[in-house]
Image (cartoon, rainbow, N blue to C red; front, side, top):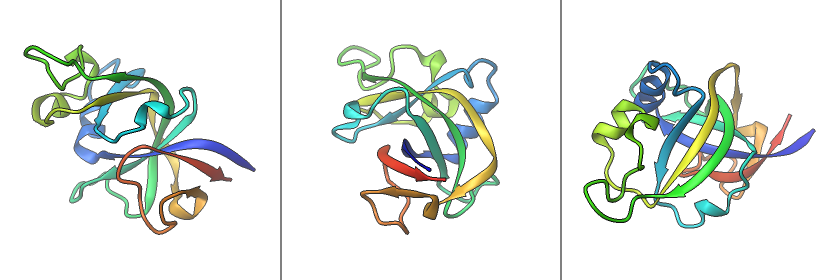
Length: 143
């Protein structure tokens, strides 16, 4: 079965941080400055690659988290939160504390760790089949 999905990398520390805050699993925002991100179809399943080792959540070549793509919003454009998401409580604490400015913030609803991870070969995107995307991209799931 082939179905449209979004593939995205998220640093392990931010996934762990989001998972440690009650309520963030329901709705959490991650940042990106990749142009065209706002063209991704909201409502698609998201498969997340826990990136930036070393970390216990890092599994090379495996997508280990999932959720649904919620809204995609522009960063605050001016003032003390310029380049940030408007509500710091909707971001993983590590991301809010350490991330620099972004152009966009993309929401993942119902963030959860997969019981069974999915490998790169389970997906087809415009990136190489052997390469994890460097930002959220539209793809097809082949399972």
